[in-house]
Length: 144
View 1 (tube, rainbow, N blue to C red):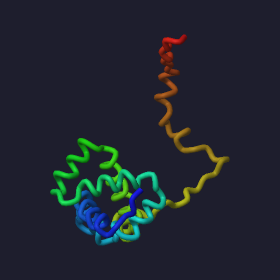
View 2: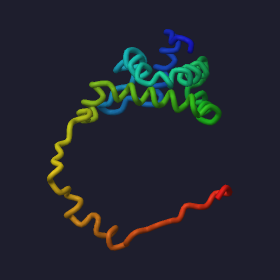
View 3: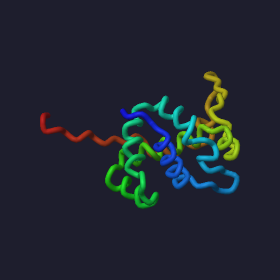
View 4: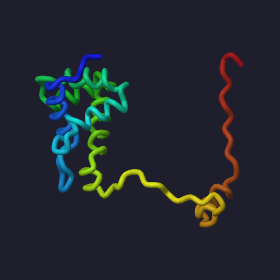
């Protein structure tokens, strides 16, 4: 894989701001550094995205953002998906963004293995129980 350079980061910054525009109290991706440290963090966690991400970013170089992203979506969906995943993943890794969204991040949920779950007693499963079992036979293969 080629190394990520400053031009790649600048192109990605434009793409990320286009994909996730600033809105209300939600900052633009470049305002939280999605093209800087957060990009490095995402690619460190998902190195399998690097090649497709770079191919997509470099395809978009010197092109109209909308036309380039639409072309990627149509002709190279894997690169398009890598760019959008890296942009959204990096954006949501930002503490500023999570605070603006009111999302505290992953928090532990209390669980008591000896307590009966509410869905067992509040009638949610009654319709399923009354319906009875549903079984669809698996189609036979030609080798059977």
